[in-house]
Image 1 (cartoon, each protein chain N blue to C red):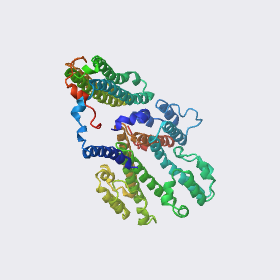
Image 2 (tube, rainbow over the protein chains, first blue to last red; image 1 turned 45 degrees about the vertical axis):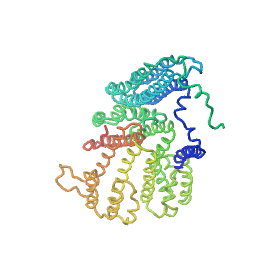
Image 3 (spheres, rainbow over the protein chains, first blue to last red; image 1 turned 180 degrees about the vertical axis):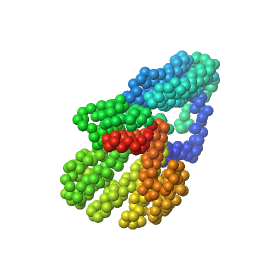
Image 4 (cartoon, each protein chain N blue to C red; image 1 turned 90 degrees about the vertical axis):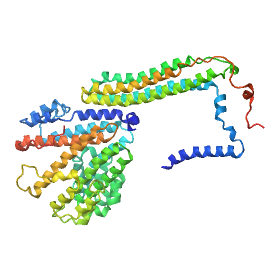
Length: 219
Length: 354
């Protein structure tokens, strides 16, 4: 009943604690090595995740906004059919959010070039990978919340317009401010990869010995 | 966070119900209605509103026919909403119908007790409170069978089961039965609305608390001078509202209207119910105060229901629309009656809504 909430919190934390204590007590605590994780993860992972998050979260925000606004326009339009054309502008504002995500996705994926693995782990490539990941996350989250904001404001705008036509322009101003949030995300996302070069072959920064390390589980 | 998911299931219906609300008659409509000379004029004036040609096929016009057709319009609108609703809105709309169901079941019980033909009572039942197995209730010949079939067939079974037994149905006064069941219904609705979360619970609890207090005060005033004992009276007060628990206890012991007024003085919103308007020089007397109180209750109810429309993404608008439309039908009936009986001096005593 009410216990599902506690089960869903406690089971993962229990698993995490058991794994952590196992590592600690079997003298392999050093296996949990964040630095090594960052050095060994391919920059392609970061870059790909960044592009995926960018377009994925943007589309989530846009879709959420549209499904929030759509039913209100339909419901309000039954008695006041005049609102149905004007209020499509709220849907357009939501759609624009997804377009920002597509633009950034295209700009980011232009940095993804094929590089053989032996020459992949260079300083510049690490920088590009991280920049793509966090830039994509930034743009995605900004667009998600922008879509939500425009969606709820658009729903209220449709119902207000159905009740009193003079209110539409006033609530539209609120929506315009909301839609600017997505633009902010776009600008910051562009700035973040401003200095990132595309993936290029080069001499790796970590030593060949480090590359050849096997897992500490193998004795 | 209610705005994030409400529109998925309920956005269309909220838009529809706000459209219905836009069609509620305004002061300007009432101004032209009160100037009608005959019921035919009334019908013509109403055809320009959302009512349309609802009286188009009537051969003769009486107040009852106007009231019935207007109620039928509300029922059609409500059934449209109910058929398009999913959980939990469908359960909420069902709760709205339970109050009418209680009236219908009490009507059938009265009919059975007085050995009337319950089939003709079926036509006098409120259409919002009909359920599929209502004709089955009419088959019962004595009160024991009726009680059993009520328990099996109706959604009101929990209210009957916990409060009354079959023997009670025979012994107790019918109004006490109605008040007991209605108390159980109000408390159940209050609790259900709490599970729906904010803002539905905020809006609905305010409205239901006022409803409970109104019933408490009405039961108290109506029981002065009857043989209802104070313990019996106290058992009819709902356990919700601003008057619960101290006000309820005080009202259970009250003997006259002055004591009721003293209890209501403690609650700022209810203090003004008992104020005499500046124009009245003399004391209104008990009956006058009760009539004025009823009027003030209606006005407060309309105000609370109007305020429910100020919030979006909650279910209160559905409940409030039904109540406001009912008030409008009462207003129309009042105006029609005044016109029909040519008693135009009190024609403006309706409760304005918008």
